[in-house]
Image 1 (cartoon, helix red, strand yellow):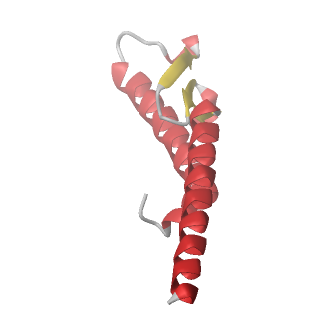
Image 2: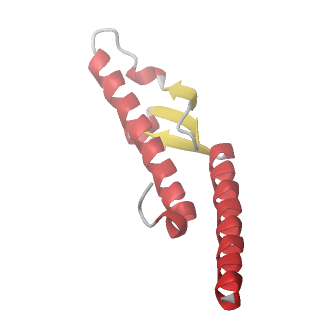
Image 3: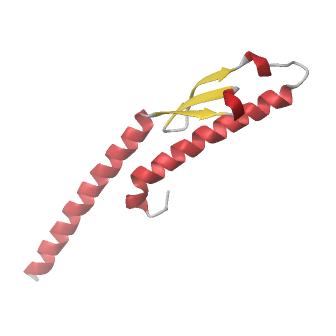
Length: 102
């Protein structure tokens, strides 16, 4: 029975270590800034690892009051690109702990 107690204690230490590593990786992600770009960089969105938008830059060439759809499309492209970068980095840093659960 003593061997089982040692194994359980070892498992608990490993779980605590993994929990600390996951927390550190999550903190690193939330502190990292990402940029999403539309086609030809007409719109650039800066966001953090929590997907909170920090800044948006729009090239004045695509600001046309008669064509708001183009601006909307560029912003959507830039936002989706930024979120995809966050997800890719998150998967790279946390995937070994989550096995695709996040």
